Amino acid sequence: MRVSVNKRAFLPLAAAAMAAVLAGCGSQIADPASAGSTASSGTSCVDTSGSSIKVGFINSLSGTMAISESTVFDSLTLAAEEINASGGVLGKQLQVVSEDGASEPTKFAERAGKLIQQDCTAAVFGGWTSSSRKAMLPVFEANDALLFYPVQYEGLESSKNIFYTGATTNQQIIPALDYLAEQGTKSLFLVGSDYVFPRTANKIIQAYAAAKGIEILGEEYTPLGSTEFSTIVNKVRDSKADAVFNTLNGDSNVAFFRQYKSVGLTADTMPVVSVSIAEEEVPGVGLDNVEGQLTAWDYYQTLDTPANTKFVAAFKAKFGAERVTSDPMEAAYTSLYLWKAMVEKAGSFDVDKVQTAADGVTFEAPEGLVTVNGENNHITKTPRIGKINSEGLIDTVWSSPEAVEPDPFLKTYDWAKDLAK
Image (cartoon, rainbow, N blue to C red; front, side, top):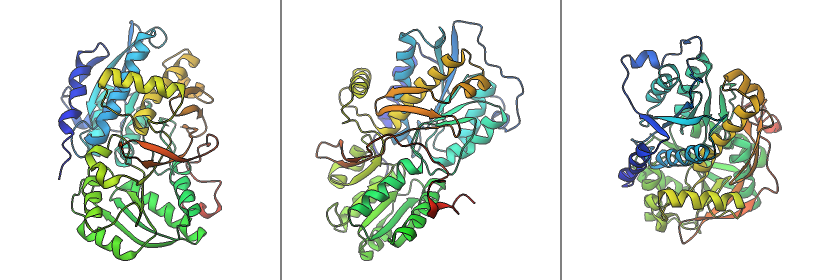
């Protein structure tokens, strides 16, 4: 089963290609292996002599993750156009070079190498799965380049060459568990895709559950992109767990929720809290299959802030009134503005100077004010639990009273002291 939105995923590409912000998209290279190599290319080849500066976008515009990642490409494109319209960065227009990670970690590493070594971009924005990030990390570190990663993830990582603008564990997973515990949840069933994020997230959930007296009644994984869940949903139903914690990614969620409903499970009988389903995924999964289910993010389109009102209006004006915004899209949009602020604080595009200037940089994002923590290159976030409503949007049912400092290694939690070993 494959989501039918993939044709739409390529429409923004065509529109963006006609825009002034796009300079290149997926050009081939003579030696892909060398582009993805972790061998340092030495001195940066970024050219700051002209009236423009190159930046790279790397997203899955094909494959199982295109349902999610094509939307991040759109929000990055919007941010680039807005920044150019307001005068650019240090007076230079952004010239975007786009690459398709094609839902394959090795492709992400290869294309990232090209963006750094051959396209000479000043910074790169994108990635989604932790596997794609892990594959790119050594490429950016070896080349002393910058990646802005916009998606919530499992934590237990920090790199001076990556800025993490999505939530880390204490800004999403732990608040979701706290919310479930407050609702009286005594047992959980864990379902996830079989790669880095779900397995590490569930390791953290297991530690939390052991400390809080919550019973884990099952833990099941399926390959990324899998569409067969009959065995898993039967195990979930038979477990009689109070709730399900869902770390499936991409279009696997379509099959899972359809089969979940087919065995008689609903948001009322056994709620599911998902950390990778946002507004954009709801139509593909099917509103009838997920209405009333819970999500854990830091941003929803329904947030009532001046910055969000402006963001949503601008996005719909560019891409269509029927389009929606989501947490990863907002985090990606925010990432480009944070980079702009870092560069302008540093007065330079030089990586070392940008890294030095990053600490304390703020941006009034659609989700609320965010601040860069220069010690771990994460940002403050406001955790929110949402419920999918009858219109396919997500309403906030709980919110942290203030922004939460990032704690990617969970140093402030006694029960997590052995997780980073």
